Image (cartoon, rainbow, N blue to C red; front, side, top):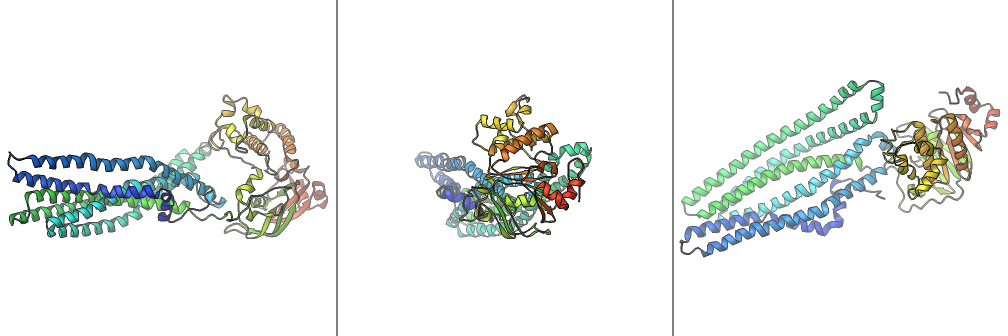
Length: 587
């Protein structure tokens, strides 16, 4: 599992390139070689023109050799270089990009519960693909031009100096001025690109949030409200894009003017030196050829600098949002949890939510293996937190939680959660088939095992009535199913998983009374031999529990069986007497 990824862009990039270092070296050499063929071609043209000027019509054999070299340079050298680069791109680019997406996705899945509460899922998905797309731009589309440009620059300087040192100084000083101006201006573009990327990512998250809540939009007749609200984010993206693009237009205008100045200086210098007999006619073709190619290369490379800065801004923004330190990590020597009895112990546990009030202080409690325990209390009293801490969804401030004597901080999160089957109050499903959703509890289960679990959960009845049966797609988060149907699928999934520890968060709250009665029998059979925790809002579901823990403001204030707690006459009896329709009242 990918527990660590570098959070600096350079280190992050090398993390994925390192396994292909030999290919990277070959890629760099070919890109550098690609910059050599242009000046070499200009040298051949110079030789061709000078030879032509000095040759009579009866002696033109030497021209054929030069023409042959021109053809060879065009067709063989230049073509082979670029086609090999294209082959490397075909062979490795998609592979590396997929690894970036895959490992980043895996890393993000290890993020804390707080991370997913603070970030919209649509925005996270957008940032993962944005990171990969822009690293592709940096590594392939831009890097080739930068390397080719560097090679072309060096060869052009040497060639210009070979003709006349004056041309070298003209090209060199022009390059310093052009590059300094362009880099300084492009540095300003990074901020504008970052603002644009941030606004696009925010818009994507807002769109996903609205689409995910389309039922609320319909029920409350808020379509116009949502459109007007979204227009605000559209305008933010529009303004950020226009600021960035206007800056690019002005930058390109200035760069075009500087290229024109360089070409003018080269032309006038050639004429002046030719008048003094210091350059040949062929030198006109050579100097103007490399000047035009150098100017075009510099303009295009600086355009690529703009693209590079935009890609860099987007990649950094995405990386900073995605690759943040995990709050909960497996230790380097973490062992696999081995459940023998299912005994759960809280030992002097201290916990509070980030930025919130202290919930548990020095909490100690033991749940025997195989015991069936109900958790009750007002909303916010600590019931769900108690369960989430066992799942290690949050890290303790102090103390320890043990299962069969094994500290949860010393075992892998994967083995811990594999030992627990959780049925939430409001289960969500993948937009996959019913068969796949149920099989998620045991991915290697056969179709027959899935169907048997569905029958025990009384889900088979409604599934068999669907046109596609178990192959029915359930929609985003299971939206095509009713709440009760989703709950039965979640129960079937837990039955199939058959973990030694079972947790239920009012798992039958959305079922009708007849179905609930049938499923209670199945759940009771499932509970046998398992340590079971049930968070209950309907106290009637706890009558057969071995033990009930009553929570109040992070404390376990009462502990006993249903009858013992009623006789105690405390908070549990107050809750029992105050129930209307079987549910707990608000505090």
